[in-house]
Length: 115
Length: 113
Image (cartoon, rainbow over all chains, first blue to last red; front, side):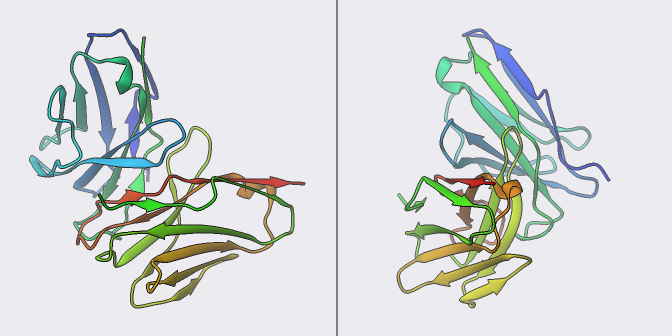
């Protein structure tokens, strides 16, 4: 049973380009959470999605960032027109259900570097 | 806003010693707390959790203590091993029923052989 799969592991983008980060939840998990981690800091919540629905996006920047979790396929975190301040590690976690301790598992993250 | 923070950013111990990592939280609605271990280049790994109706919970070599009066929790690691070297985070769900976690800054634990 594969864990939460994130790809790519490392992503380099020039300022102004788009970054697409993918998260495939564990088998049987239909809830996905995205977090951002800046160097030397803890993870910061960005968005919580269920299949085809955004439940809580209170941590998402208002501009340039979007997330989706389609009926089929992985969850996508999209960052348009990246800036150097977007450089960070982005983690997703998946769970079986909405309850907070229901099989909650993190992926290994995508490290985004904006040059 | 509400936050979860740690008293000590780094902790160095000798192999075999016991380690104690502390965490303060400010959200009085917090009712569920988790400790995570994060190794370099990896995602957070669940260690142990505790609900607010408990003040102590034990796992294998780890114990979490919760003091709701002063909004403080700690992680105790017994007989610390070099493989325990990592960054440790506390996290809480702020009273939400789903898994929206607020993380502390982290403590770097270094275990010397």
